[in-house]
Length: 149
Image (cartoon, rainbow, N blue to C red; front, side):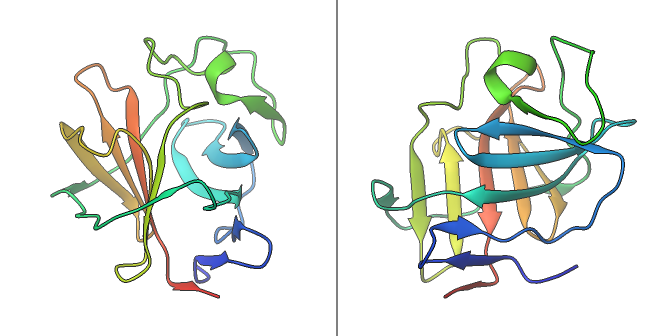
């Protein structure tokens, strides 16, 4: 796995995993990549400007290691295609399109979603922690950055 880098120059997070048999869901211009067969989240990357984000002290919640498998409304997903997260994922009203973004340069953390929501935290790899509600719906996404440059 490559380092997860946030580029201040082009306001984006690097792709770290080289994955085959995947599809992506977008939140604006930011991508979440999933395995097509298992629906497991494997990477997050893309354009994520922190200009309007909230700089704050972020405390990563306690988590277990495991997988986050997305629940889809539409199972007509094709390999290497990109879809809108809110149109394809089962969200139960918790949509990420207008979610707040938080960052902590000192701790090298970015948080998208409901920062105070702590129910079920799963670390899916060294760079991603997902916070799920009681129905398994993604409510918050923490991205652990190796470095800002």
